[in-house]
Length: 493
Image 1 (tube, rainbow, N blue to C red):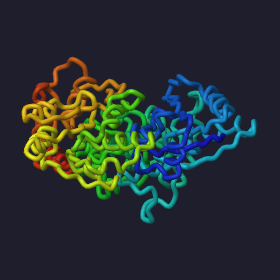
Image 2 (cartoon, rainbow, N blue to C red):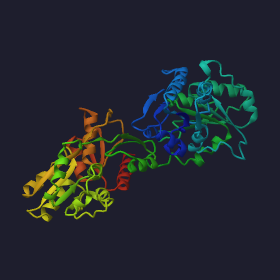
Image 3 (cartoon, rainbow, N blue to C red):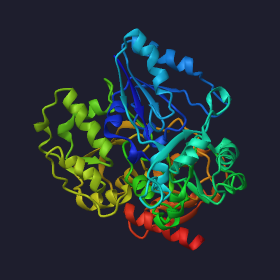
């Protein structure tokens, strides 16, 4: 039983601390703010209770007192509780308030600092908060007063300090902040900047002066979360800007997941500067209960000559089933193994087994055609795969006159999410099943506005069947898909 305040940082998942990530992954309950990114929330275990306590200026659906009581209540149930907060818990994050009741009741707690947007937001905008030629001090100020009362900011002291001024949560008070600085004697031509969605791939940065910044903020519809920076260091932003020049800066890409875990494609796209929205992978439900088709097949394992896998998931579930039931693995010694794709073959290799056949092309039809040329008529195949798998495999084997049992050992269920097509600049698909999941989750809509970037012809064919605008990467690799999106983006510009 413990409560941990975890600073999630300003948005970029890479700025989350290792210790913070560990606590999130081991939590029983997580209370999170609205500024915690989707990528960081994805670290929360599926078994954990997730409580959204997000607040915005003037809108507190879950009052602070309720949050404090929730932390206490969950901890007293003997649970490991994580309070996940944007930025740093103690930098205008009300972390101190949330610990008061816990300390009073003797509940163990710890605080894991987070990278504050006051520093990270400036860095991602190319603005060093201190510089020997411009500022030897920095001052972090909240732009949002308690209970919407007077700010109480001593602008005269801030102006006289001649350091860099950093205002968090200040977008709604931009007029007041700049007016306060001017009234305190600051030169109206002092450089100033506002950074929206700092450190994320939706970041926008606007440079002006103390006099012009309020108008810039209104004309560009700058929204929260935003950071206001005032000081001579803002002059360096154009020279030191390293973030906005990425090839896909400001673009949105939907990545449709086909399996759980981290996505190399998403990570690579984020490196190129775009905002990635992930449609979660389908959930896997093993079909391995007593009396299942796999049980009957294993009881007659000696009648088979080939064991065929079409996915790494199938390999894992098949061997997990054998281990759980105490099956002697040596009884498989007579079987030859066939599989689709390098990833599936790696899962086979992990079991100390060498695949006797793997087609060059990554699809069930290629596997079936290869087996039709390799398998002898007297040999029987056991295909262990997903329920409702591609029809090409059994059809081609049947046409070739081969004997086989097609055994479903798991089924996929679509994620419980609603995806709206057309909001993203591109949609990236690494399999035809990913296209189908996306189409089903999106509902009956017009897909003609979807720019689908596909990893191969089969995936592209499925995307075309829904009327999408299809583009195929030159090679069946993640890097080639990213290159294709960058190429299309340049052509669009």
